[in-house]
Length: 423
Image (tube, rainbow, N blue to C red; front, side, top):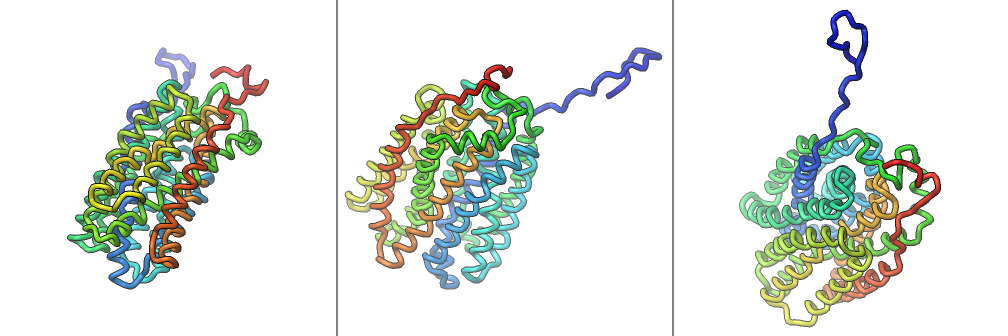
């Protein structure tokens, strides 16, 4: 409160409220945070062979570190999302950026499989929970008009692919020029930039941007969680996103080694990961726009069925630089298009007040799938000498995911006490 300007008046007027970030500033900062976080993460597969040659950590051991990272990333997500809903996404993202940089710097000093598991696995898994889709989408999406939320989510998601396109080749160059340890230190410096960028998505928790007619401010989180737990469609979304996580982790962790095993140049693996990122820029935005215009569950099903078709063609045709390139382009278009659609369905059904928490739980399922994609494929290779069974499994569960999204009831939940609340 401050005194009024009128002389002799003791009248007090309220201090101006803290301004929330402009939507375009939050969108830009959020997209860059995801660009850095996901861009660095998608290049970890390029460290597998150098680490294996340096101190003998095999593919199963390296895959285990990546699997732990994905699992911790997922298990921490609901709790980190709840922290963002309660204390604001800016603080959570700043803490995640700091931990990300520390984890990468410590990984550069590792000399055992356990050291990699603790740093690249545990620390980076916790860090990424604070600087990726759940927290950033929970900050950006509520600021947008309802008819633009899908497109905004698509732009943020595309940021991860911009990072993959730009940073994966840069990581390969850094590994070649600085060694894998020097490349990790360089990545740590880049990760530290996420700390000041977090200011751009900072807003007061539970602000008006997060209130809707579906989830007004005074509805407690426990009530929202009970609603989700009793909704069959929420569990089906979890099942489908499990499959998405399996695919992403399997391909990003093992595709470079798979191509090298077939006699292709290691640079082709790096190029394939970069192309996945490039084409997903288009895919993420296209599916984000589709989330605003089409029925989300049907588009989700189409993505999973299309992934199955792409994988089937990839394993049937001879493996050449051309087929590797075509596969990367096709799977890239379908790569993270599930994110704006899945988060959009959560927000459509349950509202956006607790989007970070509710989508965080769904994302946990995604990362449990990623655990099995990263570690399971390494396990299969270690015991069979090939990735054939892993590709077959990926194709089969893609078909299953396409089916489970079809019966989701996607109408917004309505309760008598909600219908009378203003937006």
